Image 1 (cartoon, rainbow, N blue to C red):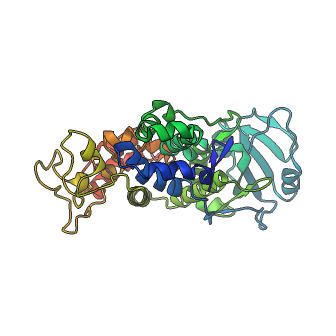
Image 2 (cartoon, helix red, strand yellow):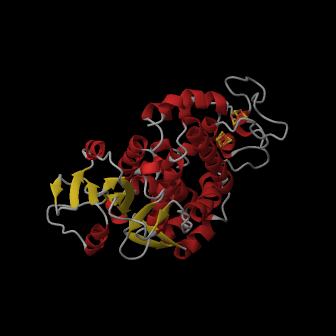
Image 3 (cartoon, rainbow, N blue to C red):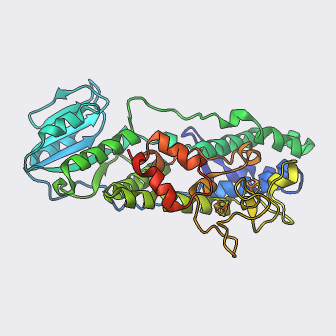
Length: 389
Ligand code: SF4
Ligand code: SF4
């Protein structure tokens, strides 16, 4: 498998196969962690993305007309010229508004550039019968902070470190090398580059949502957004398109309750799937990895996991645990939780790195999600009611 390392290097995981094979012969603490979680992470976190963006299309909609205003997210610096794509499209429509980090300026009588901060003022004047169509240029949107989330960054750095570690050092002391890599705080440092000229995905989507609320769904020419890209779609592009599409779907749910419910269920499901696929708690003989190597009073069986002896239910199972040992309330906060032992080894979730959370909730609401353990969905939804952007 080829792993793209911050868009700069390609690591062929086959080439480190020998190192992984050597590590797999050891049952020491961090070598085992490598064998279990690390191997799963390579397969799970770096799998090729599948395009599933039904709220987006990659071509200009064919029903645009002289009553359509296109709001198009792109960046036009002082020198960049309007490309033939925009020119062609602007012929059939009423106005083409290019929204980005550029300054406000008029290009032609149909094409204007508007700074992202001014677009809401402009929309105030669009009160006629015009229909609004949204579109965006993929290359102008910044998605890096979501694509290279905390876990992804850690595993990429650790994978890269293993790749470059001399085979002789590994052969001398496998456990030491694994420990050095896994506990190296530098591996939490991101090395991706963010181009300031690009529009933050969140800014684009929040504006989309605000404009949608202002004008109403019926003023949209089409429910979907169109997008434009030159060349091939990369894995990051695909992940970005999937996120944008999902968020447009969420914003179209309109009622806060429906939005909250969707986000809650999806993040809970995603966290559960991740825990299962990565198998980071790695129970052996009924003890989890955290229990095996620390003195803390961690949970005491595979069936109960961290749901035993909680601060609300001392010395017994959590009140929300069902007979089959699953969680009856799908607590989002519990799902996001990982213990310090795992956090030190890169299994850590920062909620703002999930577009579904970052582009729907205000910052304060995210704190509630992290800390309100053992809280049923209905209660959490009430708490988050005023937390939508
Ligand atoms: S999260 Fe809980 S079950 Fe998993 S390793 Fe840590 S203490 Fe053990
Ligand atoms: S609420 Fe939390 S601790 Fe209780 S069963 Fe559910 S996941 Fe476990």
